[in-house]
Length: 102
Image (tube, rainbow, N blue to C red; front, side, top):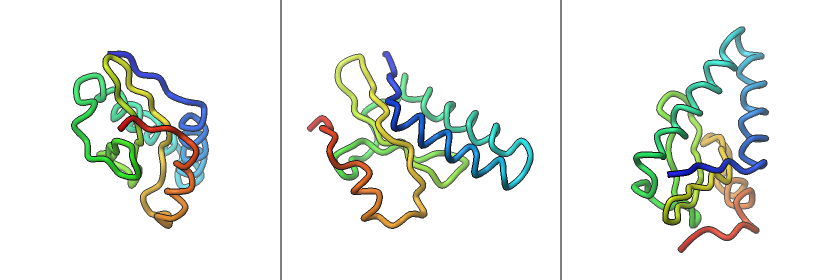
């Protein structure tokens, strides 16, 4: 299984990492490591997560974030990594314009 992380998801991870680093020294690194551990789990568990807004949604184990991804054959594409505390309409808009698998 291959995992591809789109630039939009990398940007999401980067901005969240900066936010958490401002909350406490080392917390940003812990956030980054935790989310990448969650993403790495998709090698084994891709496709089992419920669909939300047309994407599979993996909930992070340690932070209030969701990984939105598509899964086709041997490729997982991580499209966005979004804060679950945000307005659902903003989440929907952030995911618009992409073509999730059906």
